[in-house]
Amino acid sequence: MINFKNIFSKQDPFFIKEYKPKKYAKPEKMIDIVSAWQGLEMIIEDIQTQFGLANNKCIEFGVEFGYSTVVLSNYFKEVTGIDTFEGDIHTINKDQHYEETLQRLSPFEGISLIKSDYRDWIIQNSTHYDLAHVDIVHTYEDTFACGLWAAQHSDCSIFHDTESFPDVKKAVLDIAKKTGQQLYNYPHHYGLGILVNKRSLSKR
Image (cartoon, rainbow, N blue to C red; front, top):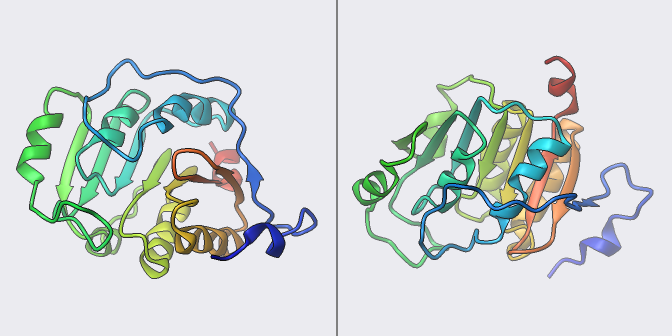
């Protein structure tokens, strides 16, 4: 496993700052389903507040069963979830579950689910989002490709599994270098990388 602490010192302009929440808050709307994302719902409001994010549009790549999607719907008026709904090499469930997830999330307002590979979606979409969430297949290549688009089309982009998948953390580091965005990492609940697009935030 790569020791990122040894590679990146505090003198490095791309040193990862540890994200330290000022407030933990449980969302009002939740779904009762097992998810590796559990625990992260407590810091979404804090991320929105600390970085001054608007609450209009959010995009999520990697919905799976909808846990994080519902969490995000507490803080953004529109949440668009992109997923193949067929699992991948890193998920246990390989069955198609679009209809099941669509039904599970139907009681929650503002959520739109789109059955699509992220690669097909990003080539035809140029919308700018307040927040983008990337939690797709945890390879370097896919995280970098999807994550770079997310970072360039949002004020803030978050990446799950930075602690459990070294390839994810490496991809997020490289996106930070390419975009010049500030990178934070929350080391709990398998890790959450946070890229802040200060340039786009300053234009709001």
